[in-house]
Image (cartoon, rainbow, N blue to C red; front, top):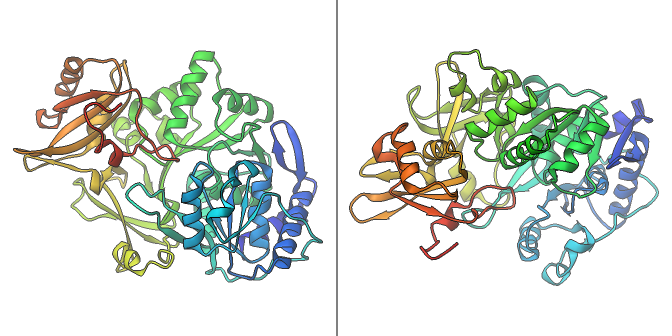
Length: 488
């Protein structure tokens, strides 16, 4: 069974269920959603799209996104979701690498794109007499071609099959959260990433899909929509959780209507998730995944996130939880010691798109080498340290930046912190901290020396107005390494 058949099955069983909303307004019920996707599929077939062709989505978060997504699958195509914040030149490179036949693009995003690519650019969702049924595809056929964020060079295309998406969805329901028809998915994070991957299991359940009129993340808007619709599920990056918490606390808004906030995509610092849970209650669930194993490596349950009775609750809260039921997870080091995290299972990619060299490096003996460093405790909880490339070696000792960042962020006058290693003639590397806030170096030194070994504390502190981030909110440490003392 392919993902397009999930929409067809829900529409046949529950045609009148509300499906797509823009703000408070109902746009389509499931019968209308299905018919719109089938009309898109017919138009694509009429334009020469054949099974397996790649159709790109360079769209903002609107109801048309899901219509185009399922329409492409209905036509037998594979989708190439592209982050709406990318530069047209970056988008053109992805379209070329993917061999995309055509690209749906929001009108304001499409400006300048046609001159950079041979792909056909569609700024409106096309319509034709609907196809009667989805074009047949095998479960191992390509469904979603995901391009990595490319923080260290050109992004790589991760091949994600219909079978992988099915296994991911099944694991979500088994290990992460239940989804019912009465629930609503709210799309404040880019649909080209985790939010889009979670849309399909909400289609499968016949749940509602809520699109903020801003087409983005605005804390006040999110809280207002949650109050109006109720039973809201939302995928969010850790930076979004922090912003939502800060706004809600300032506005004395309890977050009525928020049922589940799934967070992933970057480091969630202990102080931030404690503050979020203290304010909103037990609505938070963490998952850990990669594009190469989408959304499906580990999960930290809402109970574990909210629990304060376990003797090691802080250590568990600092972890990313236990392996999901679709994978095996191990660390190439003895228990409790840090090593590279390895994964195998039904949600692991078959390989990178037209990149056998990278595939051979990343997939070895059936295991995905994630490039992430971490350790497993005796209860199976996995704690991330850093990407292997971010580890600092100073004077022969390994230092993991996240451990230092966790301490720095405990200071009341530090809002963001990033730690990197820079070359040092005597020690190999020295620890340098970039700080957003007005805490003094002396205060930060005292804080570090009270909690971590002296050799781990930063040797230099740089106060900056903000940290460079990619389109998913991850700090670009590669860019920090290029900043001179006079840079921002």
